[in-house]
Length: 147
Length: 134
Image (cartoon, rainbow over all chains, first blue to last red; front, side, top):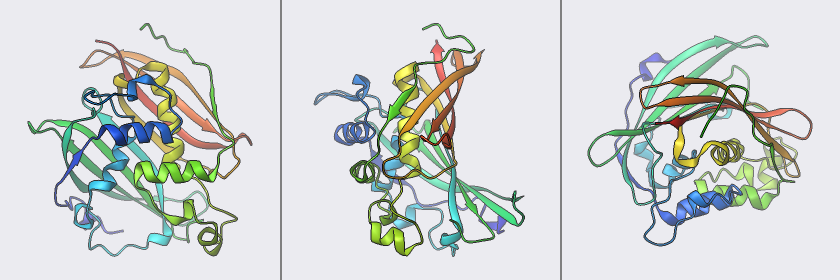
């Protein structure tokens, strides 16, 4: 466990919430909810897990794990959380994302061994600098190879 | 809308899941780990076939909750990944309100959510908060 990673912060990136990607994301998740279906010029709300698609806007240096040696074949995505400080982002919104490693801690595994939990959070702000959304992922490193 | 503790919507089912669905989610989200669309790659990693992205199931569960309580009203959505999900699985999403309390923005309903495989095994355990009254 390397608690010195806590606070490690990546370079900011810009994400545009695009109408076509909102529609594509909704369609890929079998949603027929009209709230996600805008016509050109509309600003429909994005689906609750849409911020995963920030991946399209992030270069390697926008990850707080950039340059960190990790044993990825023993790491599982354990949990994911999204917090919205108001209505979730809408198509047309321009967000600035900053990702950091927030917490590193250990727990005893149910079948013995130790599991290391690493929580990273990406904060999304609007052009006024207001925090509008947070995406928090928890990675779990097992003491045996993940299966 | 009026929401009370114990409220539960009609369950929603998805599937049988197909590889096409995994590929479409990859394109939508940017998760292009080949273990989710390349059977040869998945077998070489020790799996019987490709399996679905955990965030794919999470997105289905988030959509189910949004259809119930309002896409623009979600304020928190969280998931824990349990069992893997495979081609031909049929998923069932269920939920119930566990608390309704005043928050700083208005009344917040907290819901517990489950995405369950046809085996009864839980793929995703989730929770969410919705602003139900401003």
